[in-house]
Image (cartoon, rainbow, N blue to C red; front, side, top):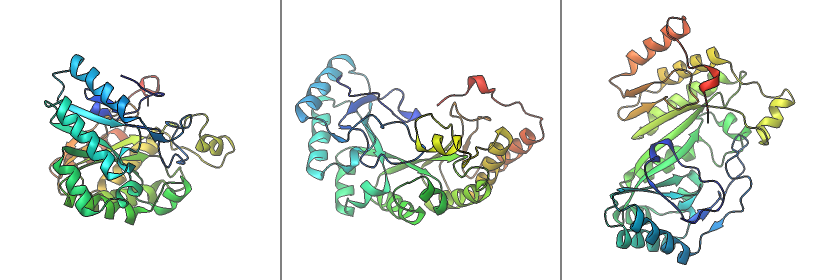
Length: 289
């Protein structure tokens, strides 16, 4: 496979064929994100995409899942996306699930009919980095759009038959806005009702604008207890009527995996036990991005 730069994919796509169809991210301005800083956004040549599909067909004939990389494949013109999805169906007929990253900006460019068309051609799941439901936090982190835009676009995608898997970032509001960030993010998840939500814990990476803010004393990351309290507050407000809620990423202090709404109260009790010191936390040395 031909890859330009490092390839980033959601944890859930660990066993998927990783097909790079774009390079980088069309927005690439989020203050906390180091993923695509060294890449200039662009589309991969279709001849290379087809060559990569031939490579995967010869070496990965049993893989039934495929993820379209990089950070913003959905921003491509509709006809190009249709050509890629048709090529996947032609060369990898065993693939039953195609996923990609999406954001409010790229979703807003697609009409309801276009989204339904992509779903009919095999696109199955969109991974959206919601990060926060607090508009002040989103603005500070230079995310495109506000919480209302993300809610509207996620609903349009689901109405078109696409599955939504969203991620949020504990700690993104800093110590000062921790509670506001947690409450608003929980309320957004409840209103959005995605098929899956995952809470990761922010780790500030050198070289990002947020790292500079932290070094200058203008941003303070909550400590482990603060992150646990934030997760509890978020979950308290995230009355999702369905779906999985995950907090089992390597960055998290207390791994959780629950089916909503069935397991929410048990998870809140476990968080209370952790805050009281009755449950051990993941040590710092074993945490990672």
